[in-house]
Length: 265
Image (cartoon, rainbow, N blue to C red; front, side, top):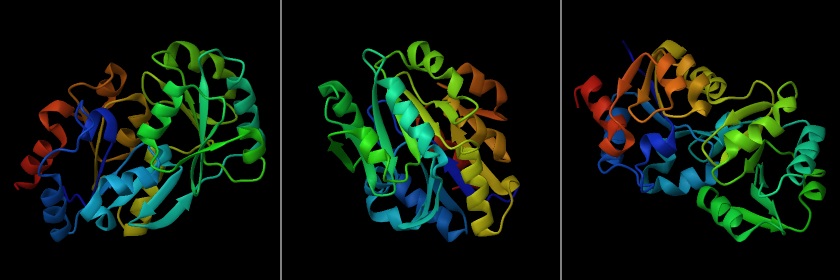
């Protein structure tokens, strides 16, 4: 095994239940870098949130953000997959018909939400988006800006409410259940796994040279793509069933512990 790239989901995987990065991660990433191994957060979160979160090592990382719709090497954007405009506009109109559901959309410059969003929804948007701006009319904004992801939010009911409501979008967009509150829509074919393949091309390696960690259903393609795949102990049962290995939970520092063991660090 000659691992050259490690990709790790954030929420439920690298981050603990308090949304904190594991202690000792930064020196571990630098030790890997010295061995020629790159590290890539792979998240539904926006790039700017991830870049800010990794502070002093931010420029040393590669980033799979927006569930694979925006890919960066350090601060440089190396991939942006814009959705068809009609799909974006139809999704915005559909979510307006669902009580308790709200939308935040991702452009290259950041995230945007509509003025009438609830206080709780805005709090949720700001938790995951470092650059998040209110606009009077989301559809009007999306009609003139390329959008790479439409994130749908319904507190605690994403699987029960949002997935059935958007089932007919399956042939027009890539749907990903990203958590108990979130469903993400991207351009058809976009996924964390596809983004991992793009990063491999940038590095001149194959997916067999990759290790990946995840916990939820939006990590399915990521784990299927990587040569060495790990599901967290707290992972969704469907993801756990397809992973090559299991590792300790996010609250047990499972990602870092596994990397240290594999690389004898």
